[in-house]
Length: 142
Image (tube, rainbow, N blue to C red):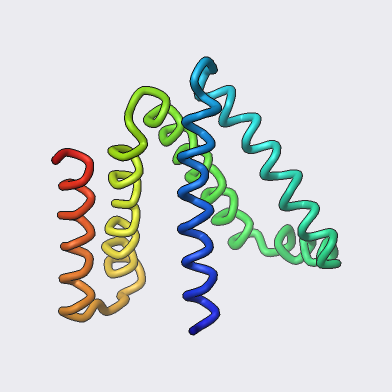
């Protein structure tokens, strides 16, 4: 099995736990405040990972590349907004409906990759994207 596939499956599994743990934790809390606490925990955890890996010196490489830094900052803002909207959605909605709609991010990412990067999507991959769309809508709204 390819390394990327293992990481992608682990990403999907741990992302599912975000919804489950978040729904349990949000029962009597403000979604935005809970997201802020979650982001602090994530930041501390990730800094710890970088320290343990001995890669803190590489942070200066990111800071030195202004274009890369700008896009990493934009990615961070987009991620934070995604988390805020996700936690607000699972606070008031069912995880079984919110999670599939959230996975439409796959569809949006593929469409943007085609438009922005000129990535090619085969007929089979296009059909898969269509099925993801249909499946997400059927699960969430069906």
